[in-house]
Amino acid sequence: MTRSRDGSDPLGVVVIPAVNAHDARVRHLLRLAEKLGERACRELDASEVTVNWFDGAQQRWVTIANIGSLGVGEERFPAGETYARSRFPRVTELLEDGQGYIGVLYAADCLPEVARVLALFGRSSCLGAPLNADDGKLWGELYLTRDYGRPVFTHHDLERAVALAAKAGPRLARASNAP
Image 1: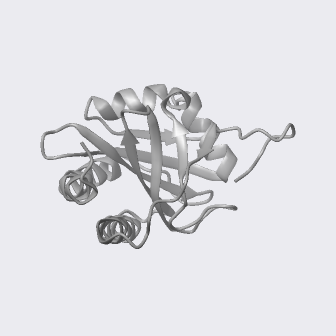
Image 2: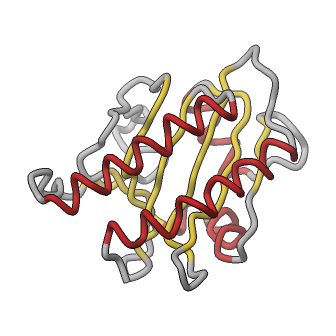
């Protein structure tokens, strides 16, 4: 993970103890997240796909899996990588409202919190789609990026990602046993 000159993390990453990967429920969740990421990479021509879970009790995003062309310091199944909700307030609001979003670096309408992440990891565009549980409550996010030199994500891509996330969200939520 990239650190600023003073040693702090520019994204507010907090490392929590790793989950017990020997737990069958956890292994199943990781397999589902991995398959979703691989499918999204293929079908939406993404450089990288991240599956995040929203921990409402702690008001943080927890990265479950990173699939595809990973950035420097990223791991496929990171051990306890989290981001405070306060670092991504507008993104969280959009996802909680059942909406996805597109971010294009240097575009006038790119959310500052999104532009910061794109620049940090050397990506040109991203999109996020809500992963909802069976009851419609936000469980997490399907987050896709594309590298520089590749076409930026479009609203058609977002529609496809939202449809993919709508199918996967309930399965991930059931597998995680999250409230």
